[in-house]
Length: 440
Ligand code: CTP
Image (cartoon, rainbow, N blue to C red; front, side, top):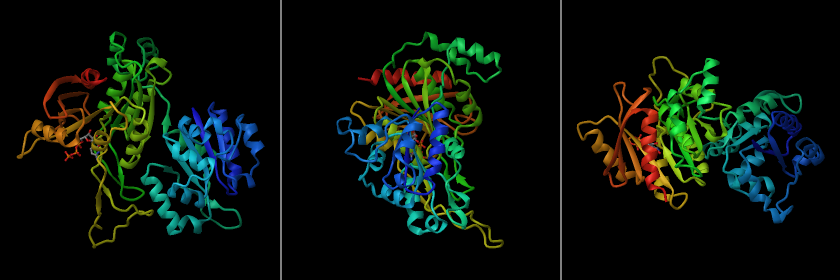
């Protein structure tokens, strides 16, 4: 993986050296971009020697290489460690006055900040607000550790240990594989790992998505209420993962944006690691709607097809306190104010991140007194503006968590263009059959 390690000017910059060494030992290519202030703490030769790559802080170095854009665009993951209070404020403002800030604006991959500062600075309302804004925009801000700070004082604000930063950051971009060849399957089965039998189909499938980039969102988003509670839904991610697997088997370059998959679905994705490159798929793990939106849009800029199979929370708590909300006996529950989340599918359909991009959505419906499952699906198809909507009936054991599915495919006008039922993999292939017909 190509990792861009940003280092900003705090005493904890010395720990960035250990993080760099750890990432290199794990086989990643790491390009270090320090700020001028970071070089007051650790010299450029240290970063250059350990990374094996040149180090610069300025946009005016290597101008012909357009580094200030190329570095961000070429990275699979950006980690800023330590991230000072000043740097986070600059990132929130969107400043672009050195190589690291310009790189951040150009990056379309997951971005992780590991803050380090004194407790008072971390607790200051300005920093709290900046951290909240960064998280809202999809930046993964790691909670600082608690412990000894620069002087004799202790408290929250300490940079987490390099091993912890690496683990948390790498878990967001898991360059794993969601498909496997029949040969790989027999090896996996002999090791007793879970298998998706429907993979047997892959050898006969047409390579009609070869050279195409597709993004599939799967699972269900979680909206934090406080550090321990969230608002979530029952989506397992099974249909989205089946879509990613089917696309990879048909030759596509797939990014799976995975929101809180059920454990057995995560196991299925992980079990396929190490299989053939032909079926490779990048997995970006997210939790909240803000993170999912940011990851889908980042990968969507390059995609021929975006499929929103994730169950996205329509609302999120207006505020997320840092501390657990306590029950006051006898006073009843504290009200939770909700605000509306952006409709990611409608945004993608109306904006079109790329001309000719095919946008696909799902509509999970139960039907009610005001209309059937299909009536609601038709209304949704027209409202969202996607090219294709797969309508399925959910509730009473149907749709969520099961291995089978039944969908009616509607076009943007709400007209029926197909029907599919069977395993989620079979339904996935029917969706791709319909998508292929829409591709230019
Ligand atoms: N979707 C989205 N962003 C949201 C809500 C939904 O991108 N904030 C997408 C889902 O991924 C799915 C489609 O929109 O592809 C329909 O989702 P669904 O939950 O069925 O529809 P809603 O718009 O939430 O409408 P309602 O809950 O009223 O049925």
